[in-house]
Structures are given as C-alpha cells and as structure tokens.
Image (cartoon, rainbow, N blue to C red; front, top):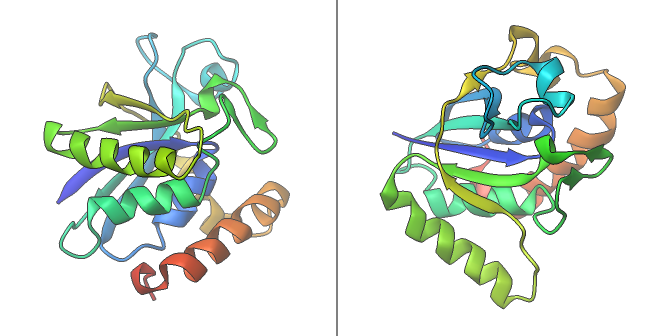
Length: 173
C-alpha cells in the first residue's frame, strides 16, 4: 500500500474521482500544508491557516500504479491555474502533491516534466507530506451522500465522465 496526498480544488471533487479508481482502498478528505496548529473548514476557506483542501489516497500500487494515479489527478483538474479550480478561488484550492516517501518523488517529477514537454504550464506544487488534518465527517464521501447538491451536480459528473473515458481500465465497478 502507498499513500499520496493530492490537492486539486474542492476535495469533494477529487475525492469522488479517486473513490472510483481500482486499487484505491481509502480516500480521506482533509487539510494540509498550512502553518496553523490545526485546521477546520471555516478557517481554511477563510484563508486563515495556509492549509489546502486535499485528499489522502491509500492505494494498492500493484492494481493502479502511482504513475496512473498521477495521470488521473492531472487529467481531472486544471494544473495550469494558480489558486483556482473553476469557480473555486483561493490558495486553499491550489494544485499540489504531497509525497509520503522519497521513492515517489522521481515519478512525480517525471509526470510533471512529461506534461511540460507537451507544452503545458504546470503550476502544481510538490512537497513532502506535512501534518494532515482529517476534514469534518460531513465532508467525507460527500458526493455519494449528497448526489443532488447543486455544486456536486455541476462540478463532479464531468470529472467522472473524463475518468471513465480516459482511464476506463482503472475504474472500479
């Protein structure tokens, strides 16, 4: 099992994508990367802590390799916009990868360089993992619990459709 922490906008969206990936054992929404001693939704959204909305993804690399996890991550958010994903604006929505082991860093660097070689201006930050604060219970598995919520209906289905179209062999049944 490996763990990687990804920030690509609202954690409801990224969580929904990775809950659909084969080999992913658990996805936990949370906050990391800030300088405050703790984090909660109101403080993070207010920009008071420096934290980022992220998901912690625990996955079986023998089923879905890290390179594919990263390809899915980059395909299902915009890694070329700083502090913004669609209508979500602020540093808490920036594109970021927190690696949990040095062995992950070369794969992350290769993936980003491949995208840059394709002409994309990738602004995704890469850092070693820092303290992770689990988001409040109501944020966990949010889309599955609130499929009719307006934001979810607008933002998540296109990401899931792109996942199925481009990574179908890695989509869980």
